[in-house]
Image (cartoon, rainbow, N blue to C red; front, side, top):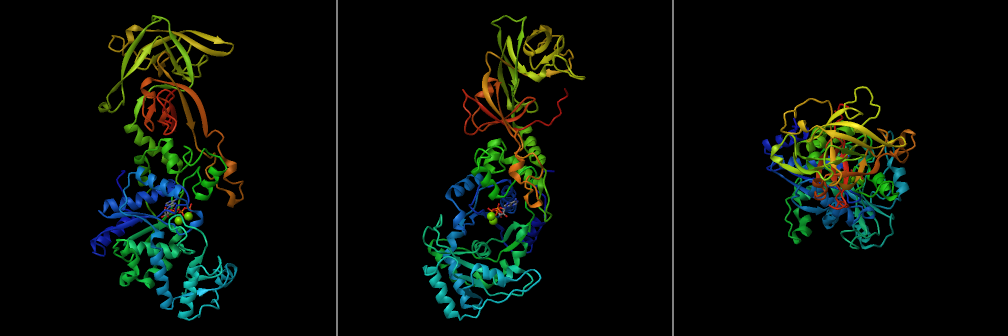
Length: 569
Ligand code: ATP
Ligand code: MG
Ligand code: MG
């Protein structure tokens, strides 16, 4: 059920290969380096790299870096790390800015062909002339400039003769079009800003709609997969591709030939799919940046963040995210995905792979009075209950152990099958114990004094004797003190982003319980795990050793996800 489905995009690709329209499929993942990747990007990554893998094609990683003001090399490096971490290998690593010279030559071609002009209207006037959904726009008074004048002005824009915003290069399409994107859209704007990849080389920058489709065409992208909000931009995408016509104007690619990149230009096809939305979170980069900047979270890789860095630190595995993306699937239907689906994918992945360990999160001391004070033994526990190939580990056992506070009830509620005064319970892997005495300090239970029935130890005649509950434990003498970070959803309402509907906004819906730090005890074989290693603490959930802070002598565990709540109390 978790095999990639033949969605509408894969169907198109399959038909295009079968009909011979394309010999090979080429896709790309095109992030703008203005923030960290989030779970929504994972959907796009899994789609673009997945389609390329499944149909023996290639996928490029392309930084869509046409907007210098908001971009940063820190993001570029983080994005590369994230893509590799998810297990994807890009064919070529490119930047839209690698093509700036090609874009420029293509713009001069559009001017010479009479379909682009330099416009002196300012931003406000452009808006005014553009018209509305119900009213056609008006043509710019500069629309009829001669080719010579346009070329001259455009070259002077590039040379830096004009201030920001003084002029734009615009496509000459149709001011009466029902699609506002076609009302003489801007191609270039003046911005005297340094660029993270090209430095001070340029003071004019191409618009996204112009740069994106031409980048696709340059790289020979066959299927340009993007989210639904670009559907209305598709006619413009096609207009630029057709009017620049790189396939028949390879001379425009000369700047790349000089770099040794002999690109096979092609006519790409844009196909839109619905973006991923998940409840109990926010995903716009602007809001994620605000959460970090306002220190509402502990940085980009805070385990509560929906960023790939955050999910990774929380303990999400690459395979769990791929599984999640596959289950969400690809369609044109906008919808809201339940956060639980993400957690379920992680559980399913970890249940199959993560080794089990013993840990006590809220400790209560339990003394086995019929064992000698110096009693000590080494037990062997399977690492995985369903997978013997994962082997066994040694678990030390002694007279004093820690158990979970809520595995004991002095006044047990109805149906409570764990330990109670005069009650019996199985100590996992040890045998049946009986609680004889409860030591209290005021109202607080501080110690339980119990006896272990030697006849119920593994291999003994009474080992199979039935008792209702089983509880986990760690040997007090051997346990290692651990910092245990209990994470929960960052927001406490399903739709935290409610500003547009008159709500107080996402900052007001932060879940104050989303991070709790407790001191617990773990068995030695948990403490010695390497960093970023996922395990299941029996009964309490799936945890990961923290990527940054975990050390064998000072272990730190992050709760990735709780267990499915099937524990019968
Ligand atoms: P934002 O609007 O928050 O800046 P973006 O969509 O502009 O996000 P990009 O860096 O441009 O972010 O995205 C890179 C690629 O990932 C694009 O192809 C984009 O469509 C895709 N993508 C981004 N967010 C999602 C999402 N929530 N679901 C699916 N694909 C997404
Ligand atoms: Mg963006
Ligand atoms: Mg974008």
